[in-house]
Image 1: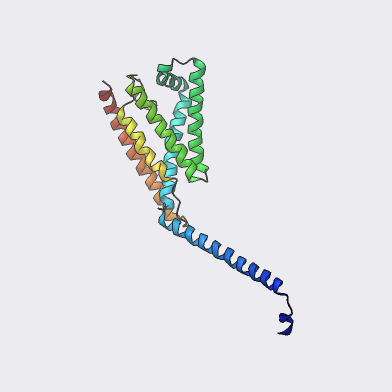
Image 2: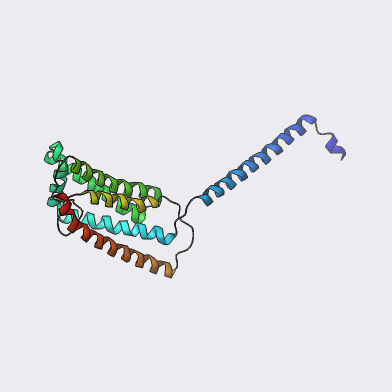
Length: 221
């Protein structure tokens, strides 16, 4: 005990401050960690099956749309020209706009397939859908009768308010990609569930799309 009594009081006070400071820093880190865990518990988490189903669904949707544009590029440019009719664009502007659209759709496909960030995938996918809806709505409001909405492989159909609503509805699951995904392993039954969900959603979308194909011309008249 005697050597301890010989330590200067200045060194003791410094050691005390270091010890107190270390304890305070550790305590602060513990509080921050607990707060982070509490915040994460309050957030809605997507099941991995749901998240993967949404990603694959938009991958198929935008992949099909992208292929449609590339296969029939001249018709795609004609559609873009009609959307920009009020601006009286030249050929260069039409081609630039068409290139930007294709670039955005490629971005959606890549982000849905490989993007590690759900937030970025949600922002780009929902942004493109809402931008398309806004373009249709503006042209409808201006009385610009479009011969084709530019969103179908089959029969051509004019843009309509119901197609604008369709894009708004599709943007909702796109926004869901921004939610955190629950951490659990995907098993064989999970893969089967994802496949069944994607097929079901695809069939439902195709059926609704056919209904809109037959209803849109009557609305445009």
